[in-house]
Length: 114
Length: 110
Image (tube, rainbow over all chains, first blue to last red; front, side, top):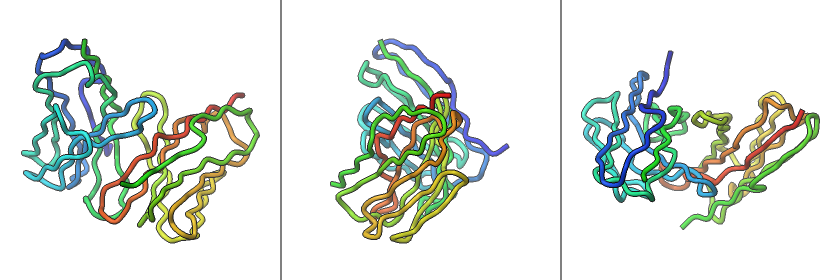
């Protein structure tokens, strides 16, 4: 089954404790992206990747890192999480960065930073 | 900076009623996608519109792209509880990145 898989689904952590949210897609998509979703603000893009070894900042990249060493994986790293990073996070992929192909989303990771 | 507004923010209606939600911008879109997000899941693509004035139908859902390509609407006929969800519009402007609206939260009561 074609899908985007994120782990974990839920995560509660404390300020300053490094964490990684994994994302993997099995559709051989070139483009992958991370979003955070907060009430009333919609989806805001954190980072995106047009292809392997190519990553770019989105609208809200501060406090986050990503890497794209392999086509299928695009982990999101929070080196020193803070409470304002409490949010619902989505990974998404698309066949290519250009064009109107659909974005395929994972089921989300709900992160709470205390 | 593009301004994007979805309205209404929240809508609760009875099963069988009709409704329309809107997506408006201050800038011209090159294309626009509508997604539906159900609780506990990621958004799922409903439709892509590209041409000004374009109308697309998906069963009881009718999507319209404004002639000037600065707005879009989604009309649902005879709403059903299964239509409940968060409806997101995502236009693409001159670059290739999507911009996301805050969404319309729709609840259809049986």
